[in-house]
Amino acid sequence: MLGRIVVMDVEPQVNCGSVAVKAISGESREVRATIFREGHEPVTAVLVVRDPAGDVVERVPMLPVGAGGDTAASGVGVEATAGRGPGASASAAVGGAISGSNADQASVGIAMTAAAKAAGHRFGATVTFDAPGRWSCWIECASGGTAAGADDGSPLLTMSVPATVFDVARPLAGFTAWYEFFPRSEGAHIDESGRWVSGTLRESMKRLPDIAAMGFDVVYLPPVNPVGTTKRKGRNDAPVAGANDPGSPWGIGSADGGHDAIHPDLGTIEDYRAFVAAARSHGLEVAFDIALQCSPDHPWVTEHPEWFVRKPDGTIACATNPPKVYEDIFPINFDGEPGPLYEELLRIFRFWIDCGVTIFRCDNSHTKPPQFWQRLIADIKEDRPDIIFNSEGLSHPTMMRTLDKIGFDNSYTRLPWTDGKQALENFFSRDAHDADVVRPLSWTANPDILPTFLHGAPPEAFAIRAAIAALLSPGWAVYSGYELFENTPRREGSVEYLNSEKYEYRPRDWDAVRANPEATLVPWITALNRVRRENAALHHMRTLVFHKTSSDDLLAFSKHVPGNTVLGVIALRADRSCEGTVAWDAGAWGGQAGALVAGADLFTGEAVDLSGALTIAPQSPVRLVALP
Image (tube, rainbow, N blue to C red; front, side, top):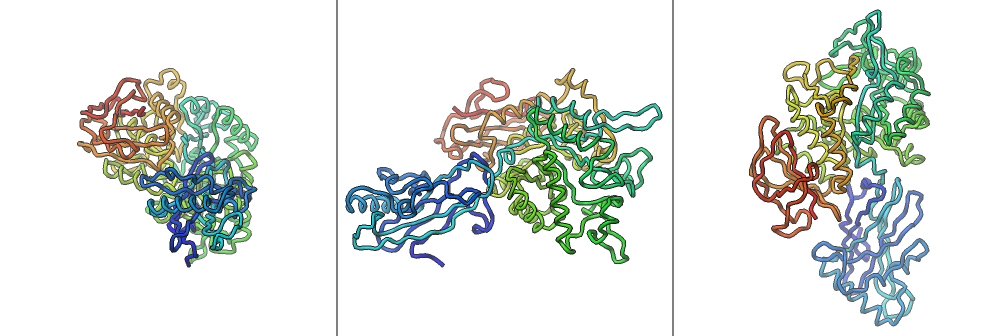
């Protein structure tokens, strides 16, 4: 029901305010609303900002929004109408501690009302978040009377209306670059008896300087827990494992322990803590893969059989992710008594936080109830709002968006399955439109998916897909071996790797890479991460706009933030040069028609003019400039 002072059309809001809007610590966001009342009485408003502790930390005057969209009222002394700071009273904040006569008060109020009417009664105020956690905003309005309480013939009418709740995360939740590798492959070798010997967490530390030097800020390891032997999968997902096959690390649990244990081949809990510390010394955080499922050998299977899904014959059902079937994995049953199971799962998360984990990659999050995730994430963040939760819930869009809304800080995307100019534009435009909910983590490829664009493709194809992920998405990710152009599918038409590292050891010759990086994609990945860091416009998704091109082989885009506008053109063909022109819409970044679209290329430093005919060779597939 409306109040006497009408407050409506609050932005930003998600699901009419029932879902928190995503924001980043240090980010400034504007809250706008339509505010008015009947007749000609002036209306003033202030945005009340509460921090995660519930304390009022700021009262920001809401100013009329100009016809051009700017939050300003030309010639109006609006600042005089509101107080700032947690000590300001509601009446002073809204009505303003105005000195002078009632006539002065009336003239300011009338001027504000006129400015608001000219702008359609839209008001706005900007708030900056200085810490992670849940922030809330309220709009307090006043009309008539004076803050000093003098009688001007009309009573002071005030009201307070909830506006927007923001879930504020650390910057790394939004602008982020991940690198994934399997620690068991690092240093793995065949011994004198012909058996494979696993790599270890300690040996894996040797990879950290290389990963940091490429510009990544998160290193992600697949599960490091013990792996079961019952129905263990063999090479290339064979239903029967060989005597020396290590099995899928997602088949968690054995006689060596469960979700709170380290695979003995990898080392100990102390070794894992040392790995986390070593990563931090190189400026990296470690993402822990937490897969809420069990191998048939997991201790929970015998200790808590009620925690698993049963088939009609009473046996425990294995996991499925159609069309795939995972005989080596038992899914957890969330339909039973939630208390003991929930407390155990919560304990597991807190155990790894105590080991130094600050990021959780939640495997197959779409196969667990959203209600569970909402409760668990809230419980963890009550004490540790800095913890980042990543959703690997690659499912139908409704489920994926629901997981984004209920608390996950960022999420996998379906980019590996997306190809072609129109599909790519639609894909990224949808995420840009939903930026208040979605923080994408776009993978070039991952252990599950080898995109068809890369099947048997030349190195230029890998450079193109890396540019698409890194420049269009604020969060991107690379799986080990991508920089070596690994691109053989298991069979024609398959999106899985031949000899997938999920089921076997895959040691790589990193010494050769260090000796000759130019033969790999390392220099290009390093350049992408450098350009990303240096240009704030690439840290966000909200202002992404695609521009029309004369050729479907060219993808043109712009992104901007105050002080930084980036224009880019990406060639989409790896087999030949791409030619065409771009019809730049300067209004997308607040420029005038015919605005300059030239500058120094951000990769090569050479002068580039994007206004005319372009020819882009696959060996250098991007033209990228920052406008002066």
